[in-house]
Image (cartoon, rainbow, N blue to C red):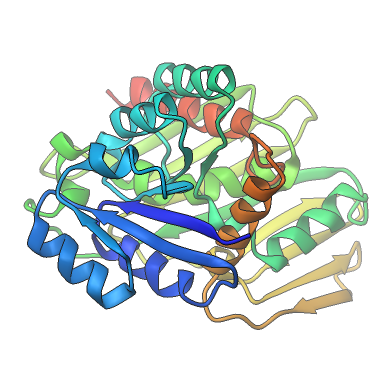
Length: 319
């Protein structure tokens, strides 16, 4: 069964998605939409889409589209996801899914009511290295998890015109960069935090350009995370336990993870080669769609909602 995709929003992330989609077996790019027909037609021609639209609703109502990938900036996610669900379309929405717990809860409840597949595009949870690291932690190979450390920053120069620095477009490091270490921590531990604290530095436009976030979990585990727009940080993620540790090198698109014992001796190493981790996300949602599933076990909607709640809590603290 060929799964037919539509893409709404044709920026850089959509270009990456469409490029990888070409390599995924039994998939097709059926339609694309932006607010400008010329842009849509150019994108459709370059990536082999049969249809181009300059109206999002035309794509949403296209009966030949199975899954809609939403690649708009996140300030538009709520409205477009809701329209997709109401029209019975499966949704793969770029992260962050939404920026408030209220919106997340409403959309998740609506998807369940309408029996529609809904998934946040947290591709980093789909790659083999994350799955292997999670297996080691879940099986107790490092004992009881005590601490997760992860960080991700873009390290781009300040530009008040750039969307990441624009408060009107929900800019800032937390939403665009912080979502990665946050969902790494909750995913690897298999639980969501009960305590949330953070401190942020703000740039001239008022958005957070660097922050440190501390989470506490019911199990007793802690997470120390950082994110931002203008810093150089190591992207190796560590999970420390009572009997060892796991390191996921360059955790966003990791090709290698290792497990060490309590004496810091290497026990096991796992390496995998792939060109782009988006492929695993695409194959995963296709499997869910073909199996008539409504939710991903790798990216459960409870985690998506919890991440939005973390956003709310931190923004309340910082403002």
